[in-house]
Amino acid sequence: MTRFVLRRVGQSVAVVILVSLATFVLLHLLPGGAARAELGTRATPSTIRQFNIANGYNRPFFSQYVFYLNQLIHGNLGYSYKTNEQVSTLLAADLPKSAYLSGLALFFTVLIAIPLGTYQAVRRNKPDDYVLTGFSFVGYSMPAFWLGLLLIYLFSIYLKWLPPFGPQAATVSGAISDPKGMVLPVLTLTIVGVASFSRYMRSSAIESLAQDYIRTARAKGVTKRGVLIGHMLRNAILPIVTLLGLSVPALMSGNLITESVFNYPGVGLLFWSSTTTRDYPTLLALTLVVAVFTVVGSLAADIAYSLIDRRVRYT
Amino acid sequence: MSDVSDRSPETAIDNAEVSQLVRPARRRGAALLQVFLENKLAMAGVVIIVLIVLFCFVGPILYHTNQVSTNLANSNNGPGAGHPLGTDNVGYDVLGRMMVGGQSSIEIGFAAAILAGVFGVLWGAVAGYFGGIVDSIMMRIVDAMLSIPTLFVLLLMAALVKVNQFNLTLAVALFAWLVPARLIRGETLTLRSREYVQAVKAMGGGASRSIFEHIVPNAIGTIVVNITFQVADAILLLAALGYLGFGIPPPAANWGSMLSQGVTYIYAGYWWLIYPVGILIVLTVMSLNFVGDALRDAFDVRLQRR
Image (spheres, helix red, strand yellow):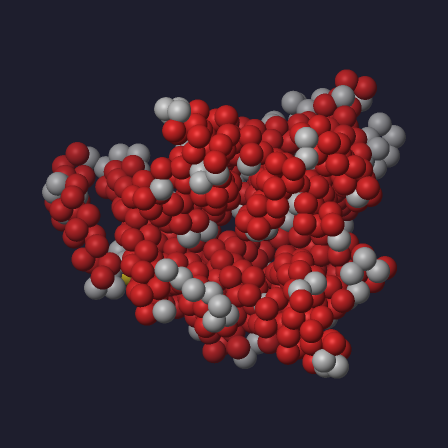
């Protein structure tokens, strides 16, 4: 177990280093280099030279990379010239809000998808299973922004129940104190999440229900409920644990869309506004941060997996 | 989104292989077809896809519209005579534009999926076949790329290069090959220890012969299923990119850019800009998923027994 964890951590570190190399190379591939990107097309050669010296861009590639890594390790993610702020400051303000949004959405997704998938597995190929499957297919096939806008149309314009935008507060406590504004963004992400999670849960529960240990449990006289909760769930939930870990990048991308639909000031909206202003240091730093979260997510999922299912032996 | 296509466990493949050893190839093909035909959803999916392809590629021959020059005097007209589905914000006929936009969406979707499929299969087969350090390095690259959210990098690239149909195809394919690479590597790991692959090795056959004549043909089921899902994902990804402002520039169009333009008029109530094309996207993506699911079931012998 310890060896497995150590090995997985080692692999994760390798992946993070690869991603940092990729973002570093991208920074260098910018047309005209970082200096052109920051100072604009009318900058003179001498100002560009000054900028390059000041930022260390005149040194050899490898030593620049080591410098970049060193800065990263010390928490310096770079400087956004467009907003005149440290990227880490921007991130510290927006990351908790994104985490709050995805956390809520993920919570409701799991809360709904696991019972729903189990119910569908028990009732498989009956009319209600077909109807629910139909809904999940439609939910999965919908562009997320279209879904968000349809919800805005229904709840904000037609019924006038909820505001058409997310909480605009600068801090996460402000977002928490505006539960009405959170409803539609969370609902959008939850519908998309439930559509795919319940499909996985359904097929994994069907598979688990066909196993011998289920038959044994039934033969022993365990109640229907006891079989489902005590015997089926623990086995069928394994793919969901993996899926939870793997859903971090999808969640981040989903946030990008949802945050821009509802103008919710999180990391996704920050990224999107940075693309429109071509704020490259921010873009690259955010890409790296999001990638690190993803790696940590799948690492946590793998470790949780081996804790839930002791049969899983990693060598 | 793309992890949904990652849903064929290795066990399924083992059984598919066993059946192949036991049954003659032709009977296996017939059985595949039968499983597929029995699945009504999949048949409906195939019919819908064929109809949509006809609509997009044959439709413009029968229904002539001007999709190049704008006509601001006739913009945002509701459905009526001459324009069955109205006109958009610069006066293009919406029905005709759905056909032209569909061509581009379908072309990009299929081209990107096939490109990604071919590259991913080669990558995964090479990594799995050679194993060891080669495998470790190649799969860590896949892991690293999988851990970067696709939309973030695509937006980053859109800020760097010009958006056109060719670049969009490449951009979609750039991240779509990772899943097939992982799936095929898993299959290759089991296939390379089979007697017939070992025999090729013993007789002095090279890696390329093992990969192209034994590993790829045996993994064809996984590849086809995955490509089906990839096309669906690509169409959704194009829509998301269009919404974020990195769609194809006019007068070219695809469904994603049409829908994202249309939704800006949601407050004005111009439903003909929002619902027809949205429903068309949902129908296409859903049908592709039905077909993909059925193909997976057809290749999965374990499910046939039930």
